[in-house]
Image (cartoon, rainbow, N blue to C red; front, side, top):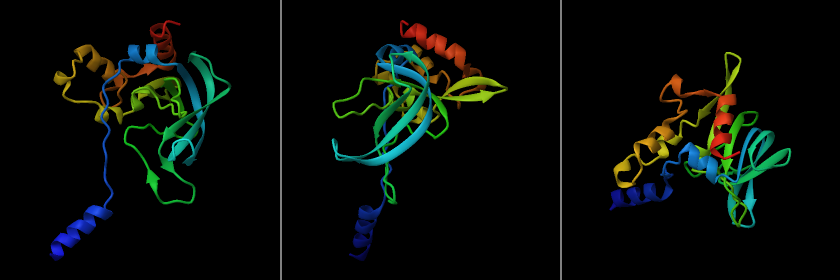
Length: 195
């Protein structure tokens, strides 16, 4: 009986590690489906309780360096579920919802905002590309966390080898050869988006 109480107590008080699984989205599909694609720098992250959804959300604001598709103001703010309220030890996080580091640069693929104002990148982390410098050249790299979120058994999904190859493009875990320059990446995305 004592063991059952201990197990029940552990079950009730333990933190659950929830996983998110998403279908792979090709760069071409993301480029076509996106309402807005921009290259920007993160200038703020603000977590707060959202009145519209009654959830903890994070508002991330970017300074826009270049609009690739669609138009934005000089800054653009997205609203995503999750975050840590100021003064709280509780972190509400959904695996797969990308986080953006202050001062870092990204290329972000966004759908139109939902009725509650949410606008996470397309395919969650698949729609977030980090920009970094290597030997003085700006390079683009896909978020390494994406690999763990994507469905591994593609035989049941109808996805082709092309979808898998597209998903692996720019994956930092794969190889150095899969990275590309910022200039070439923007040209490719603009072309795929029909711009």
